Length: 208
Picture 1 (cartoon, rainbow, N blue to C red):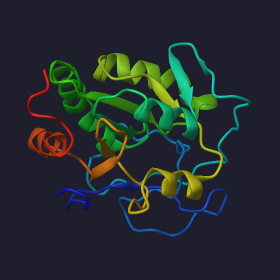
Picture 2: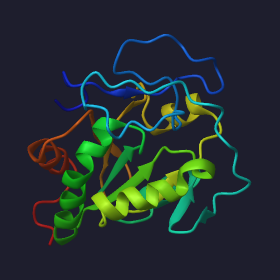
Picture 3: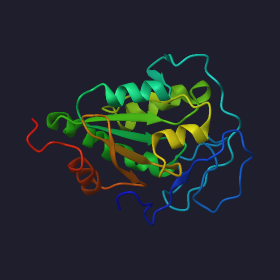
């Protein structure tokens, strides 16, 4: 399943920031932002988020109560400056499949610490409108995940800077080795086996 979307529905991000919402099939979301209506109660399949209003622009990548706001340079520093493998996990509180997956990723992140692998979790919610909700969701579903929200000014630039093979679907996990080099990705809802296979691409088996 590595690098490919599974049969289960995904939420897809709009490739052009600020472009009008494009028509898309059920299970698709047109924007890197929270939709006008939360979708936590929606089934993980046939998920569709409403077109989101324009994302609020934060003056600086600071953050708010309980979370840290990270822009692209901050993400790059976090990945390349650790000297150990990192899995970068993208999700959003308005993404039904993401919410279903959070407890699994949470337990996985906790287990990986002993193996020298970090999990950097990044929410794609609008911090101005949903910062508090992100903190609440993580506290309830994934207390071990990092409480970070992405600051996106240009969606197209952001997606391509993360991975030119990524079309913007979430949930998504990107695996970086201890030199900060992208080695593989996992797009769509994951199993524990999927995540273990991803780690095997970047982790040193002898590392404790």
